[in-house]
Image 1 (tube, one colour):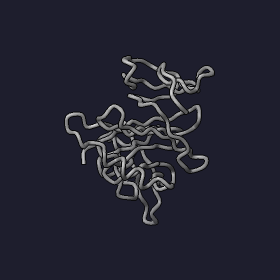
Image 2 (cartoon, one colour; image 1 turned 180 degrees about the vertical axis):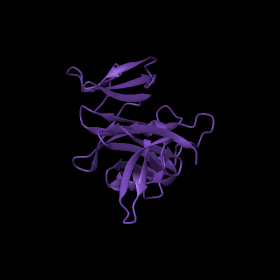
Image 3 (cartoon, helix red, strand yellow; image 1 turned 60 degrees about the vertical axis):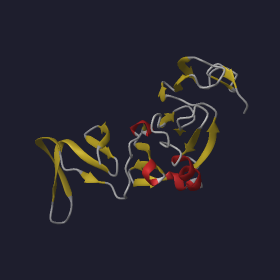
Image 4 (tube, one colour; image 1 turned 90 degrees about the vertical axis):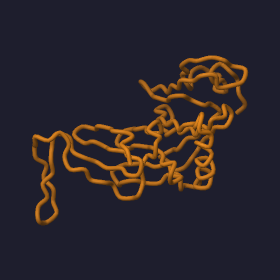
Length: 208
């Protein structure tokens, strides 16, 4: 499948394709001994040997689901009904932590309308240390936004907002939005967990 996302980390490159996730050395090459050990050497090549991770997973065509915190990378594989974490121990299907049926049902809704096929948006909330993923169908009201907490290895919250983008900066979590609610016709940037009104999202008070 096509390359959907490249992520460079020091001298390592993570390559996310539709149906495969691989790693490669940047500006270095690996020489393997007869015993199977690897030595890195400087090389003239820009990208070294491409080595796939175990597991038949990719990022489908949803690079917007990718988020990173430390050495952990999070993304979705809509074609296989999976939300995934890539870390030092390889790829783990975190959607199987009690939410397999939920994601299977909601992934199947995305893309039913070819004119506005919907999308998947991912981001890491540095304030709560959670991975946030938003599954958005073409219908303005048909979406699910929820959070995965690494410390309990579980899905801990569902949220009322529908973000266009998500990112963290200096201990704060931000989302961009456009016309989320029927009574709001607006575009902007929202800083979460700010002030005392936690139930207000994009200027609109919502039920807990």
